[in-house]
Amino acid sequence: MTSLSLQSKIDFTGKLINPFPLIRQSDVFVLTSDYEGSPNALIEAMACGIQLVSTNSPGGAGEVLENGKLGSLVPVGEMDALANAMLNALQKKIPVEDLKKSAERFDSEKIAAAYFALIESVCATP
Image (cartoon, rainbow, N blue to C red; front, side, top):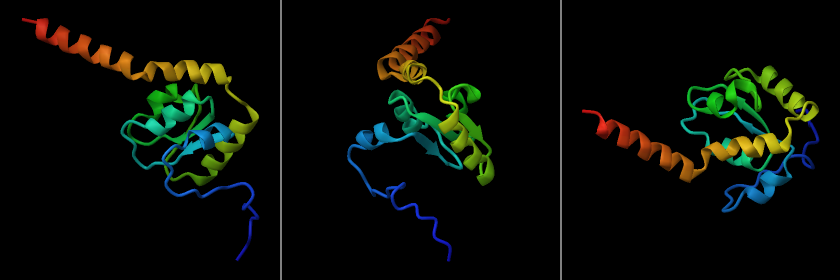
């Protein structure tokens, strides 16, 4: 068996109550879901200003990453594309402030206000 000597580069932490200190120390956040409804972890990493890579799985990753503008989207199951996207994220960084600013659109108060406005418009329609 080949050893890649990654012990000093990867942490398998198990369950964490507060992952944000570790996320903030990361260079890249990688989401490899086959399916993801609302990718909250991706949004949280974006709010921390971390470079992003995600599979373009059915669900919201494409929307969160603005179809690749804010991070790389790779096809599900394409490991070579995923590895290349991770390297690219380390070399061609999206400005941290752009990521943090974009995460603000997922603020719970903004989303709740949009839902209420939609409900009010539907209810006001005769």
